Image (cartoon, rainbow, N blue to C red; front, top):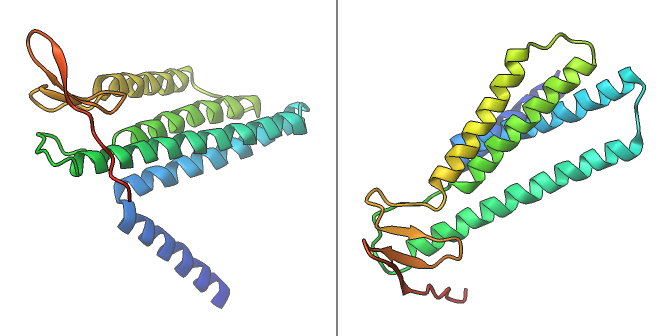
Length: 187
């Protein structure tokens, strides 16, 4: 019984630390991790049920998950770099950038995992409503549209934006011209 209480305390402490560090974003990461785990388990179950188990396919799936983790890590790093650049450029900008890319990537991956879990459940014999597949696809499309709409990050007035090559650019009525290149100081 004491082991169970220690385990509960450890899980509670880990979840509390995650919430303290990242708030809502931490729960998004937890949801993504749970959805990846569910996808692996339902994928194995579907393969075993249909007799199509292949260690090569399972290994490819795990490499796919590792690639997803790498992509989200890069998005998080880009969010951090953009936030640091905007906070320390020495110019007052009308925007406050915290995170954008990483939550969008994670939400997109969660929806991808949800679609895969639904497919696996169907292969395991569970009845799957067609509207559920359509709803997941529609939500994924919504995330794609939100990413296109919000990237690059714009101010409310639309005067400044951070272009993909991280140059500060002023948009006038007639033309765009760089204000200055951002020099990243050595740490």
